[in-house]
Amino acid sequence: MVPLLLILCLTLPVLLLFFFQYRRNLKNPPLPPGPRGLPIIGNLHQLNSSSLHLQLWQLSKKYGPLFFLQLGLRPAIVISSSKLAKEVMKDHDLECCGRPKLLGQQKLSYNGLEMIFSPYSDFWREIRKLCVVHVLSSRRVSRFSSIRQFEVKQMIKKISNHASSSKVTNLNEVLMRLTSTMICRIAFGRRYEDEGTERSKFHGMLNECQAMMATFFFSDYIPFLGWIDKLKGLHARLERIYNELDKFYQDVIDEHMDPKRKTPENEDFIDVLFQLKKQRSFSIDLTNDHIKAVLMDMLVAATDTTAATTVWAMIALLKNPRVMKKVQEEIRSLGGKKEFLEEDDIQKFPYFKAMIKEILRLHLPAPLLVQRETNEACIIDGYKIPAKTIVYVNAWAIHRDPEVWKDPEEFLPERFLDNTIDFRGLDFELIPFGAGRRICPGMPMAIASLDLILANLLNSFDWELPEGMEKEDIDTEMLPGLTQHKKNPLYVLAKCSI
Image (cartoon, rainbow, N blue to C red; front, side, top):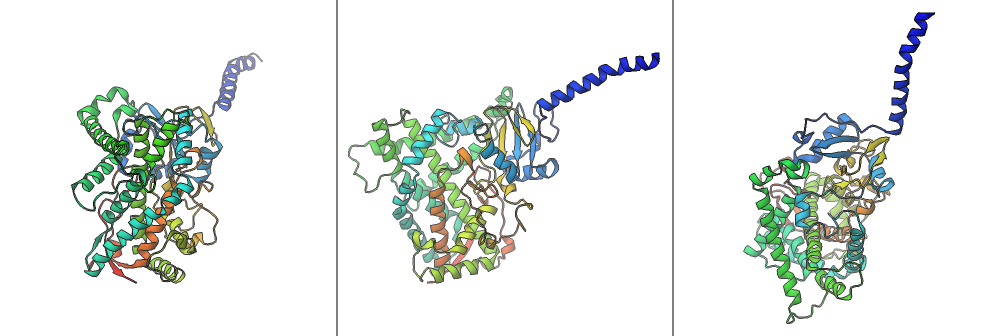
């Protein structure tokens, strides 16, 4: 009897300890699983910014569609399924709609005085409302249709000149030139010359801006190692591109403030922002820095994404001649054999529209959506996510989820012909523009531009690869940056079809 009592007395405290620990675990869910990190640096050594979406996809295969990373002193989670994307961007959108303060992004956005990199706040709501209502509304996008059509016609003429002399076309260069000219005219009423150092410098600034926004700074994750950034010359490089862009924006603003400037036929974005500044109809007291920051959003988000997506679209079509033939037959038969397709014409092409969705599924502009940050602690999929946790939504992985998409690696526009899934932020299987509060407000302009460019490229020309090159030879290497540009130019041979 005595030994039994002794055993009970010895085991009871242990049982009580396990019981209270169990109760505490119920109240405090664990962190998500994830790879083990090293002291101080955590998992930073395991990641490479140039192919981060692919690395995170591989890790998700081992640790699941929600896993945890320790990035130096900053916690992070990675979302790789549509179910969890819905939790983050709908069910917990308010808790997960912040933005982490990263040096490159903050510096080039004037400390977040715009929509993309601004933290969630009253200011962000006001600046987004201002831009969505007055700058990026459907009505405003429609007003700029004549500019889009004029510039696309100019591009078609240039490619026709190449075609008539059997000269290959550098499609990367042509499309970047087109989209930058379109956005420059729409945003600040300025059209660059077709050739010359000024245009080359402008494109160089855009590329450098993209690169610096995606550059890894030690100070973002391990502040006391920030001196390494200075040794590597990153601070000097960031300051240099910031000063170049700031001067560029200021020159454009000065042109608009010149009393001798002719009244434009169509208001550009700066004209609209100046009017709002004078009216003081918003709680924000608009300064030149606010205007510069909004211009940065327009230039970086609109120019790069449309050009890059159109290049990937042409690559997908060149690699899949069956789809190329089918979409061209639809365009040329339903388009009434017009030399130039206008925006209203394109709405009649169901297979073309399905192809656009498939392009955005496989070749979305930003494989990793712009990082979010939790504003407060929350529970996602039963796991505790601390406040100030960086949230990566790996849209690239979600768009290739075999549990959602049959033959996910295949380029099959047919999958969208009898499918209501769309990219407007309500279907989390397809989120090229994001969803929730942080959905891209420039989506209407991006789709209008992409449709117009691609439909006319396919209507006006038959496309071939240069002599001696096969479709298997087309490489898919990408440049570093928030937008995934093809690293090496795509050279193609256009033949006039009309």
